[in-house]
Structure formats: C-alpha cells, structure tokens
Image 1 (spheres, rainbow, N blue to C red):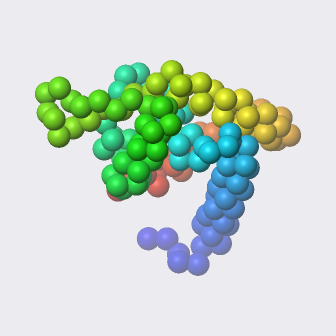
Image 2: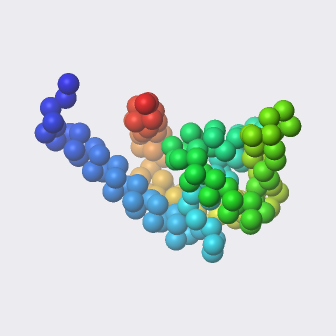
Length: 146
C-alpha cells in the first residue's frame, strides 16, 4: 500500500489534472462553432475504428454513462455526423457509424486543432513527446482498470 502523503503521486496527479484542463480549454476554443469536445472525441474515435460501434461500446470506451453517450449521439445524429441503425438480429440494440458529413466535420475540427497541438510538440521537441507517450499510455491503462 502506498503512503497517503506521497509527494510524487500528488505532483503527478496535479500535473495531469492541470494539463487536462488546459488541453481541453485549448481544443474546445479551436473547435468549429457548435462542436463540443465530446462530439469531436466520438467523431475522431469513429474515424479510427473499422466498422460500427454500439452505443454501449462507445460509452465504455469513453468511460461515461450510457445516458451521457446517448445524449452525445443524439446531437451528432441530429447534426448529420453519424448514422444510427438498428441491429437487424436484435431490435433492442443499435449500431453507430460515421457519416460522410461527420468525417468532414471531424477533419475540419482536426485542421483547426492540429496547428495548436503541433506548436506544443514542436516546442517540447518530438523526441521528448515520443519518450513520454508510453508512460502516459500505461498511466491511462492503469487508471482505466476497474
């Protein structure tokens, strides 16, 4: 069991929380009008996965409730950014896929965000970023374990 006053653990979480807040603020301000960070996150995820995902799979991926994911998906469907279809074998289930308009919206958002993130990577140096990515990935994976 860890010491409850571990200054290294406190410093790590303080930096991660502050970096998260600043990154979210930076990206949110750069997104196209009307697009929220959670919308971009779902569109970006769907752009990287092959095939469809169920709302439950998406909720698990983003560690949000199914209700929260349903709300996000409803807004994305209304905007024409995703297609939601019933499961032909089980009418209780649905499948979500990225629409062409959704891919275009994701690409436009990425085009607005990438220069900002690219500037930070350039300032830090690509070697430092490559070195820290495995640590951040493992950190995320350990946090994601239930």
